[in-house]
Image 1: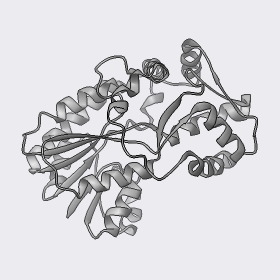
Image 2: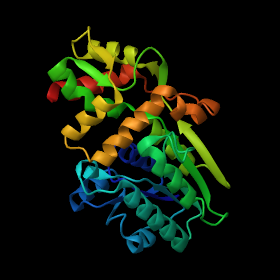
Image 3: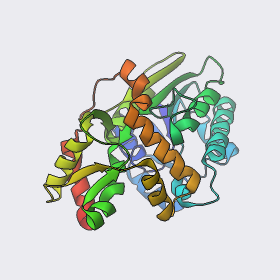
Amino acid sequence: MKIVVTGSLGNISKPLTETLVAQGHTVTVISHTPARAKEIEGLGATAAIGTMEDADFLAATFTGADAVYCMISAGGGYFDANFDLVDYATQLAINYKVAIERAGVQRVVFLSSVGAHMAHGNGILAFYYHVEKMINELPPAVAITFMRPVAFYNNLLGYINPIKTQGVIAANYGGDEKRPWVSPLDIAAAVAEELTTPAVGRNVRYVASDEISCNEIATILGEAIGKPDLQWIVIPDEQLRSGLVAAGMNPQIAAGMVAMYAAARTGKLSEDYERHRPVLGNVKMQDYAKEFARVYNQA
């Protein structure tokens, strides 16, 4: 198959590309960074250098593809005071829609998120609801799978500084209730399966690797980094919001992050996940702890 992968060599797209190439598919990887071309080609794929903001480039790159994997990345926009995430995501969704239709692509796998079943009450993730709605406007002949991964293990890296400076993990959710988490490696494996499996109509697939409590996570990560007494503490919403803003985060995005975590705390964010719980992936929190420790020790 001829498959186009967006997301350059990110946490999902790189292992996805490696898997597809190993399976014998012809893979083109889109990256906006020319310096990535050599690394992409080193994986056995073809590099297409351009941006998702350019619908003409996307359409030309998608032409002739049997399937495409699409994702939206805000890059460093979260710390740009003038960045409007909703407008940005909406424009990218329009570009994807135009490019897919113009190129005649018949199979699309689109990276969405847990919480995309709700238009409101999911904080920063609300834009995924609208993006899915827009992509669903493609002709019925286009088979679409929306991937809805849960919280990424990688998000835990954001707690490295508080662990080093305050000795704790602090968030506006926590406790002993088990919550779903996912490894990008398991997302990549699921995306590869979807891209290479015939499908019809519109489909949603949740992806998770482990279901574990925040207190258990603190114990696992603490042992991995040599801090066996590491605690996960729950702080008020406003304290988290003000801390994110003080760290330079766009105030609108900070508020959305806090609302997202609050929805996770109440269980509202994962209501649809609970109704369609997937088979869990292979990478468990204990496995990820080794990677966390490596990054922690280098920080």
